Amino acid sequence: MGLKKKLNRVTNFVVFYVLLVLIKVIRLMDEVESLFTKHFADNDRKKAMKFLRPQQQKDSHMVTFFVGKFLLLMTQYNIITE
Image (tube, rainbow, N blue to C red; front, side, top):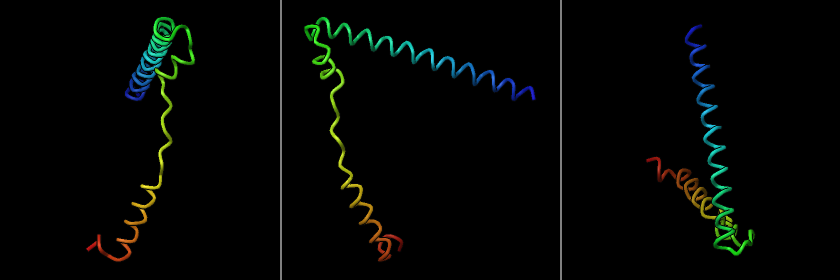
C-alpha cells in the first residue's frame, strides 16, 4: 500500500507541475500577442491574430479514402497478403 501512496503523490505532483507550466505558457502567449498587436499591427487585434494564428486550410480526406479503398481491393485480391 505504501507504493500506491507514493505513486499517487508523484502523479499529483506531476499533474500540478504540468498545470503550472501550462498557465505560464498561456500568460506568455497573451503577453506576446499584446506586444505584437501594439507594436506591429497598429493596435489592430484582428490583424495581429491573422498573422500570429493563421487559419489552417481544411484537409481533404479524399486521399485517405482512396488509399483505404485501394488497400482493401488489394487485400481482397490477395496481392498484398501473398
